[in-house]
Length: 113
Image (cartoon, rainbow, N blue to C red):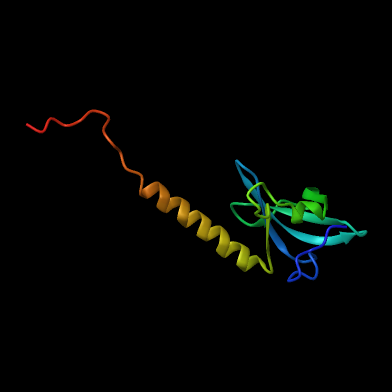
């Protein structure tokens, strides 16, 4: 069994954001199944509402402790739903700011005469 970081005694009851190159998904770790597996319930990322009982998935602990090639965890854990919501709001705000700061640069130089 892969060890959890020292500051996380248990995954049970935590919320998570799992990052992939093109998207992310969020959910809650609801039950522990054996030594290395957990049941998770995924949310609809736009509303943070459960997608329903059919969305329960059996996930190995390695999914929560994986590290990408940059050395970052691919899964970010949160103690409660409010903390997850704040993080998602921050992500959305930074994405909106990035869109607002884009500028159009003309390809053709203006005639300065």
